[in-house]
Image (cartoon, rainbow, N blue to C red; front, side):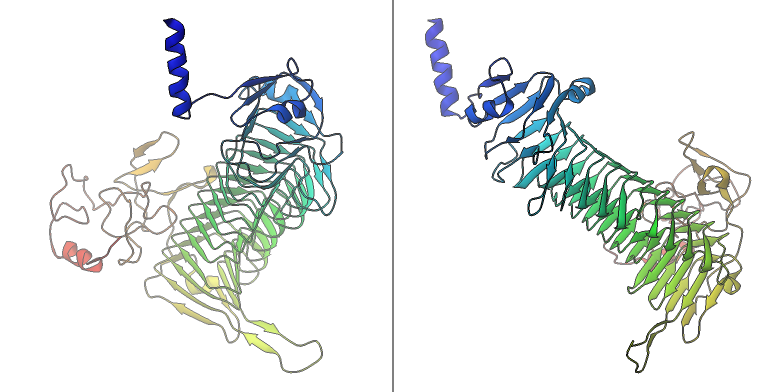
Length: 513
């Protein structure tokens, strides 16, 4: 009876496609990893014991799981080694494997590949297999992808260290998600850490080297919640979206180059020839840009593109020549709801607008591109005296700009929240605290700008600076204790419903966001 029940269950599992694959063990069942792969079928699992395996393996398009005995145990991962002996790529995928194919829990090292082939450590050939909990270290490609090449599935929880290539020392053409990885000390001519990759999240990208550009990244589509630090050749070059990142202590010819948008980032301590913090960026929003240095554009370098800078805090940046805060070179730029304070330069402590000219080598008439900049609803130290405007350049200066001490919470500790008697967010205690003074930057932004997630009372008008429009925006103070109860119709939070509230409502009438 018991055997009959087991048989019925197996039949049902086959019919429902839920039969588990076989388990193959290395070295107890098979002497090498490749021998196990050769004998494996779809859905099988190969478990590899601790040891060093001197071989170069090929998945041959099979959707199998290749794992160490404990892939989340760092000691097991570091001692379960596939060593390629400088005899080609250590791991090769055919490219047809899908997300049901997994390699997890190995150290992959000593791969070396020459032109025209790519991928010293792992050659993906377009695979969407998952690569997790691996150490990919000390691999070399004469061309592209020292660590990994053309791996388009999930790459997660990996240490990608000390790999080298011509392009993409760590990773090249990995268009899937790269998540929670430590990418360190890789090197390349361009893209020391990553080149031509897709969505990179929650990674630490540090101490990578590029001879030309992109010490950390080059030509990547989206970078979010990453720490990008200490890279040589710049932090980021020619990328798409950069969100919620900390970018610090990178060095190179440029700072952050040609990003379509940079949002909610902290950018400090970087140095470059042009654009210590950022250069050639489309939109820059809600960023803290502090303590960066360059010859031109200590904080931001704008050229060859229209740059829109909104709700940024740009402080203590230095240019040895022009534009301590912002350098606008033959480009159009706008600055709104932002703070520029304590920046220094020979010309234009806070901003410099300079004409760009091209003269043919063989003679002929030169072509000039004058810079233009619109500055509104912002605080600029020394006002117009803090701005250098070159011949033929245009500065449109709003009447609502101010020049007043911002009353930052604690510059020495890097806290650029605005002081408020009604309430300021303290990141150390993770609580709201009340100061004995209120910053004039609270409720000083453009009345038409959305207040976003500013906590109540928010005055109905966005704060200027990096925290304006966020959940950490300092609260509005109206000269008396904050309302205990929210009153219907009281938009600005001053405990009174009047024409001020009506005016604020009209600014945002029929807005969809």
